[in-house]
Structures are given as structure tokens and as C-alpha cells.
Length: 287
Image (cartoon, rainbow, N blue to C red; front, top):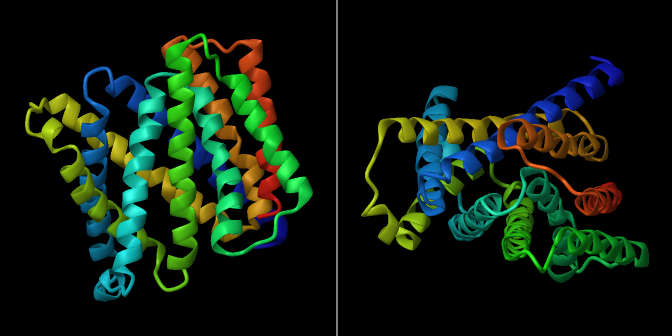
């Protein structure tokens, strides 16, 4: 396969990934009207660990290689960050428009840059600092202090993005000695245990409805599919090319929010989205 063909295939895989992540956001917004976010986080983790476990068992007869790891402490810590990231990001979806939440999620690029300076002693460049300031100014524009739900939703989305960044920093270390399937499986497994302990009071009073359980399965499958295509897209090409197509998630989120949720974006919101996209795009090419 020549370079151009690989580039086209990678971009298509990333676009498909963005579509599934946008659908995931839509599913969570709709399902959260009937089910608490705490319940969604727990079953997303539980069903994810079951599905990934079955994939591992079917994928290779030497399954012990996938389950074997020496990094349980870091895997557990990554899961703690993952549960917190899901909780705050999913909660944000109940408070702000889909496109707005999807855009703020890209601020993980800023946080990864800051955390890399702290943990990996990377030097900060003046241009990186200035672009980060512009990006966070975009977040400020998105935030309307007069609208409590908007302010709270933006704040939750930022916290969720921060915990995603912490997870990325740990994954950077874990991926050197563990396969992607191993990391994803233990993330879901430990996240199930953690979310059960955190949200037990919600789980014990929850009454199952078959249609809601099917929706939880669908959310899990959507998330895993999005993750799969995302990983595959980065395998096929350089990240600085693929990251450009990652912003189609904002477009998909806007379209889905407009069609299914009747969400409208103000000029101020669109300006904030543009600033965040341009600044994170600039930084992504330098990470």
C-alpha cells in the first residue's frame, strides 16, 4: 500500500471513530434522562470488561499473554482517572450542547502538555504557552456565567478532560510493556470495581428495565468501536495528520445535536469552538 492510500485509509478510520464517539455522546444524553450517570459509568465498565475479555479469548489461543502484566498499580491508577473522566464528561453532556462538550474534550491536549512538563521534565516553549492561553480563552468564551447549567457543564467537561490527560500520561508509560487490548481490558475491569465502590448507593436501588439494559449494551459497543477505529487510524499514519480529522467529531456532534436534540449554537459558542480547535490543532502537531 502506497503512502497516499495509507493516508486515505487512516483518515477514513479516524472519521469513522469520530462518528461513533459522537453517537456515544448522543446516546448518553438521551439515556441520562432515564438512568443516572453513575449507573451508566458502572455498566459501561462492566459490560466493557466482559466484551473485551471475550475478544481476547477469541483472538488468540495464548490468552495468558494478554492477561499477563506487571503494572497493576499503574493500571489501577489509570482506571481511577478513567472513572472520574467518564463521570465528569458524561455529566457535562447532560448540561451543555453535544458539540460544546465534544470541543472542550480537546482541551486534553493542553493538560497533556502541562503534565508532560511536570512528569517528563519537558521544556515549555513560549509559543506553546501562548497557544494554550488562547485555547483556554476559547473555553472562557464558551462559558456563560449567567447560565448556571452552562457554567457547571463547562466546568465538568474541563475536569473530565483533565482526568483523560492523566490517563494519557500513564498510558504512555504502560504502552511500552503492555498491548492495547491488555490496557483496555484492565481499565474496564478495575473501573468496574472502582465505580461499584463509588456508586454502590445508586446501584442497590436501581431497577432494571430490559430496554434500558439494551441501551447500556449499545453504549458499550459504541464506545469500544470508537476506540478500536481510533487506535487503528493512528497505527496507519502519523498522528499529526490524523489529528486533523479528529475534529470531524465536533461536526458530527453539531449535526446529531441539531437533528435529534434541537440544539442551537450561538455566535459566541461557535467562536469559542473555533479558538479551541485551532489552538489544540497547533499543539497536537508538536506533541
